[in-house]
Image (cartoon, rainbow, N blue to C red; front, side):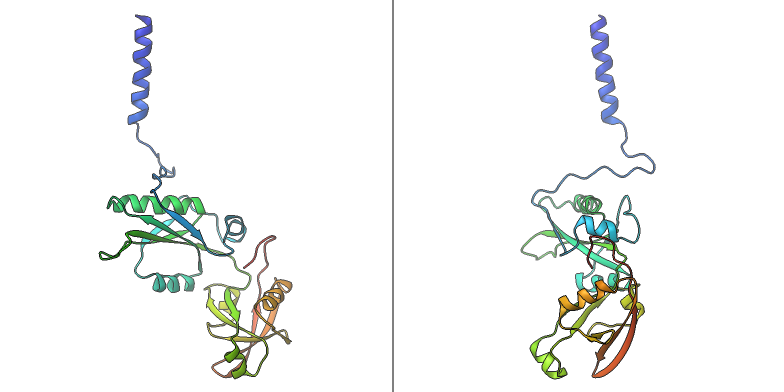
Length: 238
């Protein structure tokens, strides 16, 4: 009899654990099941270690999720607000369960330390039924703009052998505060010619934490812009 009572008590304890509500106040929600066939692709240079040392604030327990409109439009809007895309997730919709897709997007966002998630449902006529999630973090960037080498035609037009063209300018960064704009051509840094993308990156790294004067060309006009560069955390790159 004693053994039977002990066994019954043990079963009742198990039943209580199975039916008890999960996730009390202030606790992170339980992780959603992994969607079979899902994958995550990180942006170049946005590995977890670099993100952790460059983020503007600690990662939230649960990232903010928003239903996306268009990836290009949302990306431009979030860049202007100081967010940087760190990666993209793809989730095959095999069950037609929208809530499962949202749960999985949040779970993936938690695992990569995202501040916010933009989630895109597949179009009704899409040949591939994948939900797409883009992940963003607000980072402290020492410069705050992407840049690329000039093409041969661009160099010929400007009459230069070097220089870089600015791409996206992140809101709230030194580049943004210096009123730099996408499409600006950077020819000099503190009076020294900018040779190419690698050379400009080295110049910025060498002057991190200090102001630099950039000579730029915008719509055919040569301008000077002072950029007060932020410091670079050890072991990171912009």
